[in-house]
Image (cartoon, rainbow, N blue to C red; front, side):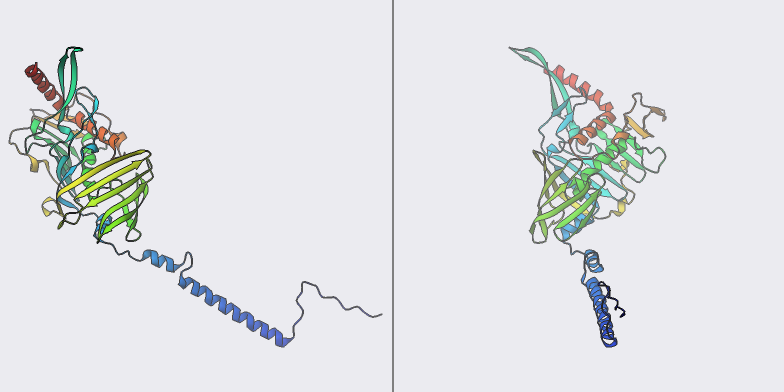
Length: 404
């Protein structure tokens, strides 16, 4: 009986003779070499996630003067500037605690920012120079009625309200009423985040920092990175990731840009700039228009004088004594320490202020911009300037006597 030949498995490839087998092996080696070469070329050419793309990302972007200014803001040796009055739309009157709106012209300031300190002097039309006047109005129909109104009472030149910092202290000076307030800076003993003067000083310095950020308060303290000559992004602890794009150039200067802010409230901001030769940067006019939900508001900063760079005369910041105009003793000298306010008496001793100071810790790291922060700031200033309330009341009584 014949033995049947075993049928090959259909999944098994037919047996090749030695010549064909060698040729096939050579083809496989050639294909493997070709594939390896293609992979190397792909890596060099820059496929996704390869070093070529990383090299492009790391390549420096050629920046113009505006972009360099925003990425690395210069220090301010001296600046004189104005802000539109709507930066602080709400005014809290010290006597009654009422919140009123005052149509005000430009607020005028001067100041400086250095690595170890700053100063800011409130000049004309500061919200600090409005007080409440209470008068009795008589009419035929309504009879006698009490009416509250806000009166602008500017100080004499040299007596303006000034705030600042040195390496060791925050300080505040009001020559008109003979008031000085100091608080230690970290790491000086007595420093505390609840020291009211420190909270106010950190709010006031933002007026100057906004100029260093070319009118964009959301970029204060943020890391700005230019993706190319027109697009930038910034990371802010308070606002998250901010993206922006320049929409209008004039030569190498920027006339308009827009950026998006996602938190705490989503909003779109449009910036418009104007320049005055030969002063090219910063822009002399910075108009910020905020579009939020269905509202649209515009705020303006005008730079009148600008000197930038490091000031060797103020390497340790600015001291209160530099701004002292009078030789007479202070009528009131207050010291904040560990969240408590003390008053220096005639005997040279510190006595705790009778009224319990407010707890400022809840405002630490809070939003430094917007009308809510402005109202909080103003209320805090008025608390610290409680001595002034008595003076205002006395002035009001005298005015009422003169007008009655």
